Length: 394
Image 1 (cartoon, rainbow, N blue to C red):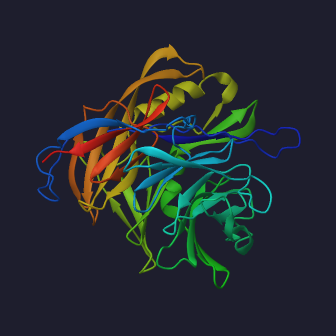
Image 2 (spheres, helix red, strand yellow):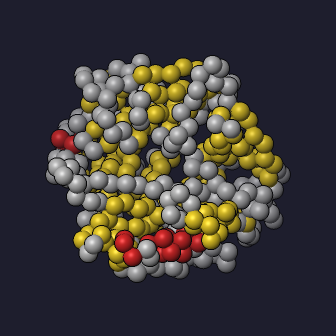
Image 3 (cartoon, one colour):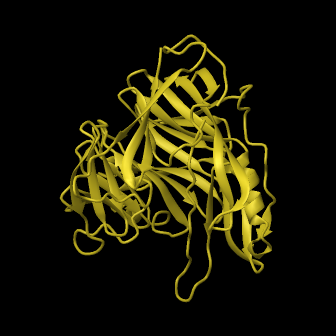
């Protein structure tokens, strides 16, 4: 499973220290439906393009995990959380346009622990983290403080809740949604904010409670020290919030116009309905067993997030089974040698059109998106930014 792992250890005056391991993505096998331009089999053409950074050096230490795509997909902003520098990269011209310096503290501060951000339709950046929900322009200046942590102080004002994603609705910017995870009971909820009235509604998501069957509690010298379990992905497309948990072959959709939640599930001959490996309920970190448990989990199927192709009006979804060698890496883990990768294609109503193994690809990068009818995947070539583009051949 592509899982989320965190440890929480008491350290002097710090409340907790959380460490996250973010793991890559991939695809593989076949079913067809003659819709959406896909029939019989998936045929691909692959090329790689380089980004011209001029005399500058781009920040690739985080593999574009701190980046966001503009709504029109014309550019991408890559953020360095250490230096607080944002790099605007033109995806049409494939070049660095400029760097933007943000401040951690002060009147225009975005906080010292930036978790993620998104680019709004007006090109402002919405930053989010614990207690931080602020909008800045692309000159580094504060435009608006949403103060979500004050409006919902009993949820977002508490460190037990982690904001996984923040969505500001394009046609109604006073409406904001936050997908949250409660650490202690491993439960998810979707919070619907009305900024003009400074009110909110919390919608629990018990649909993700079954993920607890795949969750491992980690102990350190007998004391609770975190957990390992499935990840939840989310995206906003066409006035719908799509949410998936990577242990299950399904998607949960919140329709903003109808204020309703519905689900689509699949049990396909190729990918089944869910991951089969379930870890033990707990493990002692000092026993050395955690390494083998996480290996078995990642060798099982992991269903990734949906990405929308607005040209073909279809969704793509990758799934992955990792492969390992017996060689141990610098993190005392088995070395990943590749993956078996799968690609599923769905129409706009989430009907499965085709599903196939993709032997042309043996690894999936940490960042990918659809632009101009092709899937663009982040690549690091000799410490320079590149994108591998996957085109579909008729």
